[in-house]
Amino acid sequence: MFVSAGSVFFPGLFLLSKQCLKSIPGLRWNEGDAVIVSARLVSSIQAIMASVAGYIISTSCQDIIEDQHWLTSSYILFAVPYFVYDIYAMFLCYWYKLQVKGHERICSYSDLLSLALSHVVFQFWRQGKGDYFQGVMFLAELSTPSVCLGKILIQHTLLHKVNGAVMLITFFLCRVLLFPYLYYVYGRYVSIPFYRVPFTVPWQCNLGAALLMAPQLYWFSLICRGALRLFTGSSSRSRKPTPANGYSTQMVGRDTPTMSH
Image 1 (cartoon, helix red, strand yellow):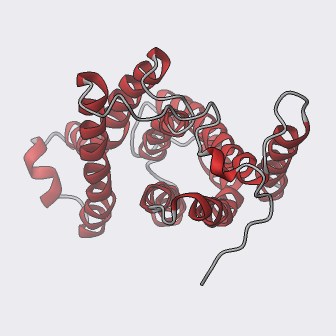
Image 2: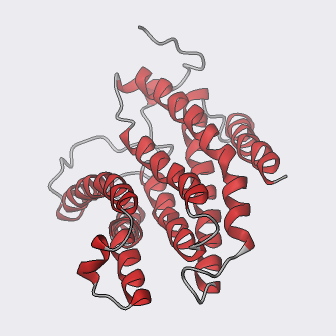
């Protein structure tokens, strides 16, 4: 039931948003802009839902290993179709961006997808235990809305700077500190020092944490560099401001672009 609901909700929300952006008087965005912004809207809504679910789960579990919450498995099943949809949306956005910029890095999308897929893997590996850890991992999505919004807002505005600060803080707290925090709370649970936790947990935990932590550190370094340029004004002030929809006006009118191979 939850899988079916997710299969309808996420693609349906994407199609509804895209149609509204293309047809509402005063907007009437072209196909490319509508697709990209709609994909980011769906990603943000899913992130908010995951964060709310994560907060409810993590605050409800007193015993971080044994306690269970029905929302843990239910939300993962609901979100499974989103992971499939996100692959389609990722390459659809890449298609339209390629028409304007010639190339576009998709590592940020694949990074978010890898974190999302880890929820599914953890769900089957944990064997009904550790709902608290799964809830905290859901909270990693809290940084996603500000990341998506940063690609839409006009640069060098107060709102853009505020969003940049929020993105920096939430990404650091929810992504960079995620696994150190999980290791810390597990160490407290079993009454061992923090530095001994990696030598106590199964090697699969350390491997998975390392694989997920590496891209978070890489993207956080890029966010810090971008924040430094934003708040110090070292970027060129003569650059033309980004349009309100966040993308080049060269895309306007190109409703059905073709990609060269």
